[in-house]
Image (cartoon, rainbow, N blue to C red):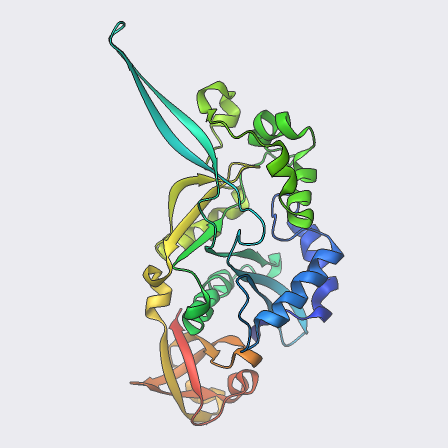
Length: 339
């Protein structure tokens, strides 16, 4: 059975291996032990009923209970940019008219902005290749919305997701090579690593504050602005189904799109139902029941599973294995979301 749970310090070696597997461009998962130790400690603090910091880290892993292996990850980050600047490029249009020439010129420009300061970010989505089947990707992606609904007061009114930008087969980012590298003088992988591990001070120090005219960039750099990495296409499709859209913000390193949605407008958040366990039954009794994504409502022992449920209005019957993983019994409260 697969269960989603908060990451713990004991997961650090597995998460480091996942970081190496994802490769450059996934800023939220650098292969750095010190960063992971810090993030896991922050996750433990965030998954506490008394947590009230302006920034929170809700990093979760997908565990195969049969083998005990961690086979995926996902996360929610709150209050982005509150303690260190969160930079984006805003793609805008400038229109100039010359009466002398009777000509109108339209230009696309990139502005360095901090418009998403304070937003909630979802990201760090990873699924081991052997588990990219049977709807597991949608399960781990949609699981985040149960947490957003359960702890709504902890999250901002806008949720964003930064999509990894396009790279070629050798891992080169045309956007970085023709723009960022000119100002930082280092490789894409180094810049991405520094941003994740050491913070954004070097961006503040070296990034130009003036608009970048897109037409002055080479075609291969222009063409990837707002284009996601091939590996991110599926994740982006899932986000769009939930109501996320591209509002012309892109990552300053690789030009990948940032998508957004008002928290209360996310389809899955609106569809979450709270129910009460009426009975715990043998799993065989639910063989023909519809499947749901199910979470317990206990933030201190938070768990999410995907299981068949017998639902009658606001009462459910749940299988014994799922009840054990969720720590629930008759009378317990659960949150459910259709698959």
